[in-house]
Length: 444
Ligand SMILES: Cc1cc2nc3c(=O)[nH]c(=O)nc-3n(C[C@H](O)[C@H](O)[C@H](O)COP(=O)(O)O)c2cc1C
Image 1: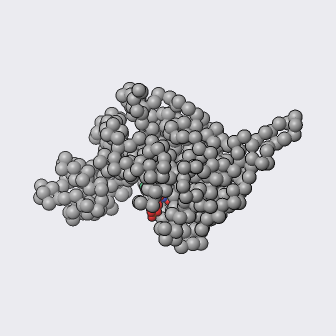
Image 2: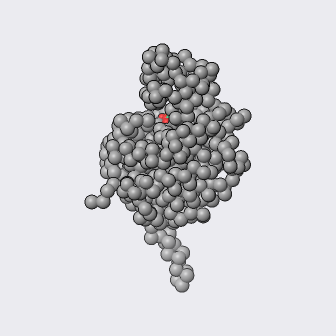
Image 3: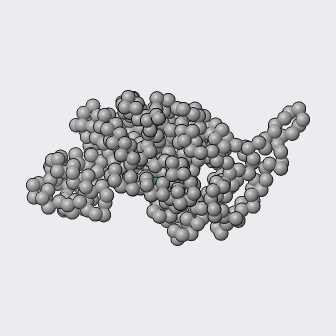
């Protein structure tokens, strides 16, 4: 049997990178927020590293303090992926799309068009959107969670049924006989849910992978059931191996409850590497990126350690008394790691540069430190792969691809090349066209 290998996805956001001050980093063009060429360059670099997919979060609105920060998302995920689709060949293209603020027909049409355009590389991260500010942009208030999740089930099922409404052998395109398609094989779906409905059909033929793959991210118990039924990929938010194993297992159990094989869901843990030629160099990179934000984060670091800390101490380590009094806050899962770093004697500025308040674990040091982290999590069955979030894309994607990827390959835990051509191939996801016949509770 061949050794199990990890699958990698790369986070694409605002065109700068995942650190909020990446737009100000040296050699970064501050206009990249509006540059599709920059996004294409990062996508091509990830493809060189044989990443299985790009993953674009989305929030339909403005969520940043634009006084100093760039918004964290792309201008528009489907437009971005359309540009990337035309300039790449193998890498999967996963965009987030809201089930609350889109009609299923729009979702089905846009994602399947992207799937056809990219020759079978599209994926849809189906989210309910849980921010009132997003709802306001559609002239709405946020619906209750049960309402949002009911609508999400209906929207996904209707989109999938629409994807199957043009049967796989419907397109005849025989110039001689003059038959374009078989109308008997392109039929309405007539699905009526409580919140959304569609008659169909959707006039789009199958792609090389049939139809787009479903992804899911977060969302508590409701999100778990949603992923269990439909998802082939889940992006997790988790800070320890133990927690990641539990989350991965919960998704696998949810898939089993839905009558699926648990291996059909791949769980991706986040990782936000800080890479430098030495640990000090990696920290300095983050210190520089955190220049404007460090002082404002000290109080929060204090709350994670159950201490009163203030910015005057930014360039000092915690005192002996503070270290004795410190304890990890139960309200933030990142607290034990923050305390561990504090006990190593770093200054508060350097503690923050370890990424202890970032959204995913941050291995800090040479490329091998990141490779070690990924190997440890993967071999502990904490994940099937990683969603890699680069601090500054301009040089960080290449550094990861040139320095971390070869280590993973040498260790036999990451592929040297793509085996297949579609996103479904890259995820080893089963063929599916239209609704999954194993789902016992269709909307109709
Ligand atoms: C790693 C991760 C990424 C997420 N990405 C998005 C996103 O891009 N857009 C979005 O609207 N929600 C995103 N979410 C939020 C979840 O989909 C979900 O809405 C949230 O956890 C709130 O749960 P609720 O819908 O049950 O209230 C993400 C969650 C996680 C854990």
